[in-house]
Length: 436
Ligand code: HAM
Image (cartoon, rainbow, N blue to C red; front, side, top):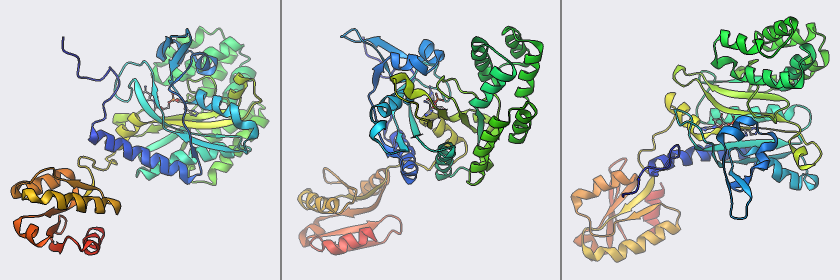
């Protein structure tokens, strides 16, 4: 039986053209992260399942994780997200490290999901996280990194928005104002997380099954109607939650000092599916009607290090996936064209004897940081320019019997069509021409 040529369901082969796109996405991610002083890190592809069981949430564990028992009877998983690995690594070194720690990584992650637009089984995800930042500055900076990243791709407020909430507010509403038990609170979080994807009737039915008092239900629906920061503040103050309102205000005031406020929108249904978040939670949404989905998700988590019996160390960060990002850039026509590779020069010869001189010149040009392609055999004149075009070079050289005799080459600039004949020993002039 012939083997299947297609990749495993929900994973992708990256042919050179797609790989060029991915390299571009990653280069901008790296540049932006480093411009804020974030340091690159990485971890293993496999982790013990227990690491995710602790705080990643039941959906990830029950439905999405790729797990197996290894030859040594350890129950392991392919990483479905990076945050637990990051927390495990930070737990090893945080005591002797100066804070804040600013780290980034672009790991590939696997989740068993139904493949569809924007959802695959293996994706790459930029993770930027800060640990140990004072007050609410880390939260604001993390949002700034995300915003500047999108802006670096050419996007602005007509393309995306940041929907934001604060879990400490949600906790106050559920636990203090509505007097919900732990179980009820947990169920309410799951309901709110789904609120936008279901009908109002379905929502009402789910809420009625939680077993809340009428008063608590009314508070719940009033909470769901909050749609801007002023309304949240007023709601908390009216309900005597002055301290939490003031805390949130500090965050908003910091945010106002940066370029992120024009993107920020309060959304009571953003609570995020992962269990470790404790502070702000946010999702960056595409505004395009054909692509209304989360491009990026993140938030603050105060207690994740405690699963390693370490003291709490506040962390905040986000994950931004390559698949949703590419869809976003394509739908807004922000993705540069990567159909053709980018090279500097194609060296060709039209007589068999030209190979030696070509290989020698190629070596010198490469030593001078140029991207050089050589033809392996004599190339007919009529094939030279079509080949040069496919290889995406800026210059092409020709060497016929005349040039061979005189130790010369013809160099053609493909942009302005100018052609010069230069001596092969005159490397200085050749380099000057190509690097001009
Ligand atoms: P997440 O919301 O699960 O968060 O994923 C973040 C982003 O990764 C999503 O917004 C989406 O762009 C992308 N993504 C997730 N799953 C898939 C998939 N199956 N196919 C394609 N793209 C996907 C986290 O993973 C958190 N650990 C992020 C974080 C970092 N929080 C704090 N620091």
